[in-house]
Length: 413
Image (cartoon, rainbow, N blue to C red):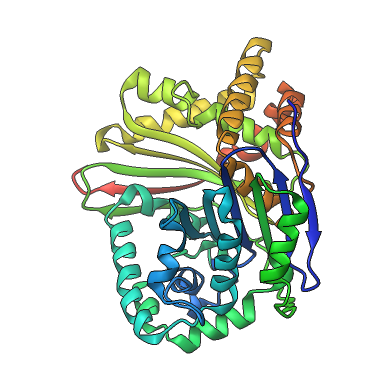
């Protein structure tokens, strides 16, 4: 696989630049900031997400309408999101609009004014987002499960915050949170597009280079107090919803790939995952059954979700553990391992067809101070995994007495 290499540059204020030249009409741009909901105090829960919303509500240079129209008017796509550890602004656009996009990103990142009247309106939008999420138990259960697993730790808090806290936020709260948590040396600007690296650096320097260095040395509290929990919550739902999972390796773990492959075999996106074949297809128990591996900077979580008829819940849980036992006791055969690797490689390559997916993954690696992994590197890492490594990974994360369970139990059960 022929690949153009990424080139990097660090501005005097600590902001890191990374760019890969790629021929074509479409360009992708990302500004990733190492601040998320785990950086909030308990009284600030939801502020990082609120900041992400409010940066679009006006700057020293532009009103909200002009911000939202800046790329939309030329067919571009502008978006943002907040996670537990990051805030991201991203855009895809036609290649003549690099200058416009970088100018916009700098305006949003450093010159937003967070007008108080807009905050009151945007709080209503966020409250609607919270209520929409609460109306969907299949979404809510993921956050409640993390709250149980990461009990009394910032990683367990919901990114959206609570209704009470969101209602209480003021403009001063936002300004203080931004001042205390957004550091220039924890910002990475990434790009893929048909522009020379030297020109990209020149433009980024023009719009970001004059910003003063703002270095913050807040240390995140590590999570090291996991205790397995078994929780059942009565809900007035037609379906029962269930999460099963436990602690897994962190983002930069040197042996992370076996866990990624293990998760893909168990309940990844393919219809022939073990959970899908042996619970959904064989017994028709669950419309949705899947597993996820979320890797944070210092800890990871592997979890299984299923939405299921209440009468089938207990049997389905037993079947889940039966599949976990198989992975812990039976080494994958040569052909099974080959097909599992080819499936994951295909999924990764297809995902990288979207330049934005590739860029987000690469920029996150830079933010985490990891080496840049090209597609060919990822393929080599997948191909290097052997059956012993998958068996070892399964035994480390699927031990039954180390698994937590959360059930939203239908009251009709």
